[in-house]
Image 1 (cartoon, rainbow, N blue to C red):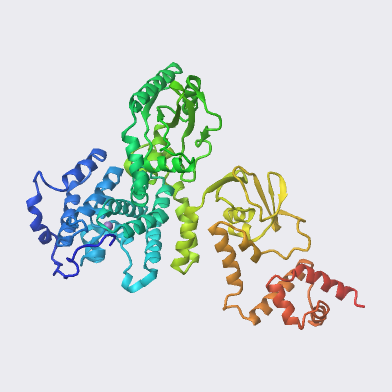
Image 2 (image 1 turned 30 degrees about the vertical axis):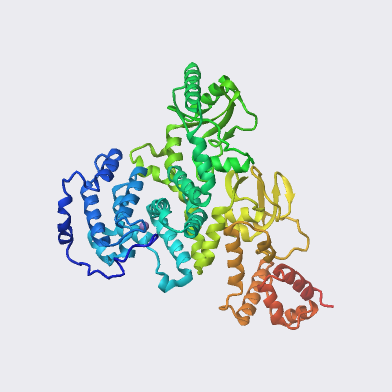
Length: 592
Ligand code: MN
């Protein structure tokens, strides 16, 4: 479990495997009681999903409460307060009833005698999958690998149902909020681990509403002094609210004048974001610009009309305009960002977006759960999960969970650049090269890469790509390309591993070489493969070999100790089959 339970589990309470109704009996006192702990949860859930089934929430709470009874949090609170709080976070995100049920039960299998089988019988396969996805591997069995194996298992489960990750994030958020009872060292350790994988995961899933809270609680534990300073700053800003009210009013007038129907809201920054800007800019005092959001009623094009109205009202600051509608961020975030010189000459940040962009910016992959009936046209859904699917692709190629976690970490930590290839926009980790791009386009394309142009100019394959580059990749099948004279035959080169950046490219290149040197391929196999390759190449020239004599002579002429060694060289692509065949034909046709 994330935060130690009390002695309840260790004392080995005799736990009932009795039917659910029997287990529920002791909780009947809750029914109809005003102090019912599930009331707030149900109310929050029903406010977003009016026809939700509150009965199953009560039922799952009762089971969880019964199973965790006698266990306590470090703070001294009964353990059940934790799953209830996790379910509450999920409810506020707008998740469906199934997620809330699984959230209430998420620690039962890990920390009590409740089994997956019983869970399956009581609540069905969906809830079971979700709970199983967040259940940790036992450290006693997996030792040091437990953490990595647990994350891998969770990612695989999330590939089938992304709600696994949402429960995990809510779980971590509540645990982080209740870390005060722990030592500073263990607080720092848990906060760092959160920052390492879960915060970037949350960012990739686009759930800003959750990420803001996670960011702030991480800052609170890792940089308590900075957190205090920012907190003081935010609480003592004389005239701040009045100023923002005036800015919003003037923005509304400007928008109305341009006939743009939009809502203007004050959009405070969260503490972590203030801290980041303060540190990045080297400011002595917390750096925080007033910020408003303009949420237009109409289509995407209205965002640009709103931008015109805002820029007509206040002079824009050069270099601060960003169009994330034309070029969405890698988590599909879309908005226009600008900074203007507002009233009294003070800088003001303005975000401009449609209603649906606003929903997606706040809830990311959770949007479809919160607004199930909304126009799905611009909902993230599958697109946003492409990244997760790719992670699962390389998961299949990795047997070692530690290596998988390292790749995941690296992939999550990288900044992203956007390049253009084949008329598509492609996201790559910053520092990527044309080889990374080729593997992103397809593994075959990667393996066969010969040359690349960047913005129309031929460039070395190890060149670092930059945001906005237009890149073209040439492979053998793209026609005759003469770039690297004397280059080895096609197939990836080992030296590519020295400069590729993306996990995809690294995995594919390693796969290529490990297949080639796989223990299953013996020298005899390589000899046979080499002979077959030469046979096929000869057939392209409408030729065949009546005897092996010319081949042996060629091997000798090329300096190989014997024919077998030359055939292995062909299989390993150290020797180009076309070159062998050309010389072979010359040898047969013009024997001296
Ligand atoms: Mn938990």
